[in-house]
Length: 78
Image (tube, rainbow, N blue to C red):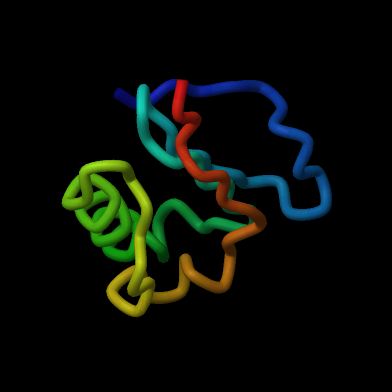
């Protein structure tokens, strides 16, 4: 599911993207170019969904997005 939000507190680079899900790691990217990075966004989503907990071990397939990563947080184990 894609949800648009007004502000993700990444004003220095205005286009931000986050990935999160129940029982999955959370990722926050900043400085994303939706048009130029479209293939890397899709590759990153595939890498994220291919793991049971969303933790991407090898970010090379994510292309330029791996350099836009601001933070990642492991899934909560509650």
